Length: 379
Ligand SMILES: O=C(O)CCC(=O)C(=O)O
Ligand SMILES: [Fe+2]
Image 1 (cartoon, helix red, strand yellow):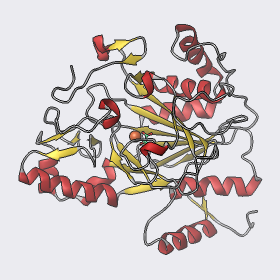
Image 2: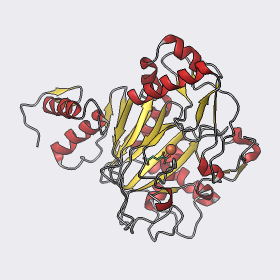
Image 3: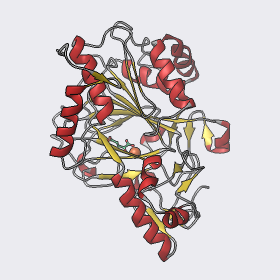
């Protein structure tokens, strides 16, 4: 419980600020969880044990946290025989947007219109319902109701158009991100043993998503999702390096999950940093990207360091949903140790594009089927 003598500073209690600083120092200057959102949430939860109905937090211009009010039920799930991407299901998500709590709708709207510097929004306290054991691979059948899937796709529809990518779990609109034994040390979302390097989601893809939603059904205290905003990272770069990063002297390979194997082929040259000062955008892949000349290689090395420097980390817990603006922030994940016993971390992921018509003939229904092979891209 909060002491009445505690004073509030910008939404935080003094004792929380002290403990944030202590944690920060003890961890050698690295946070394991987004400090402001975590502590604002904690303050409210400490004060009432559970968030009060209708509570939400606007946490200043930098960090956004919205808490789902416990008394508002999730939208009714679509039936288990329906496909997530059939027209009736899609219409259901659209109409369910109006059933979302007002503060959630407002939080999403503000996020799209005036994104925070972090490029991230955290929703907490979402209902996940009773869960079966974590499946052993993304497309294993999990006997569950469809509350989380419907909620995820309703939230995604409030941000734009949920889409699937054919090579990513067969184009599913909702993908189960679970640790897979055979992928433990690969640079794919189902890995675990390795640090998943910072990346723009599908950096190589002409129709990459604008938003990425990660809904945590079951957390792992060791697995932190890492985020780094270009708008913070640029402050760790000198003007000459930034100038190189703003030129199309870089190229990236195709993610191995799209090819089924690693390929040395590169796409067209592009610049990893774009946009006016203060509203920069990023396209970056710490694993697959290369500079096309020596100066570009050196600039890319500096960018890797700047992205690392600017990182924040959030350990998603059950009921947390993180929305990442894929143009502002890159993301990754810390290593962790799965048990493969049905209790492992389980995220559901969805991708959102802003403009379906821009995808053109590569779009069938809600599936983007752009083909890549080892020698040519974007066909
Ligand atoms: O596991 C995570 O937290 C993020 C993994 C990832 O990069 C993704 O699902 O796109
Ligand atoms: Fe990712």
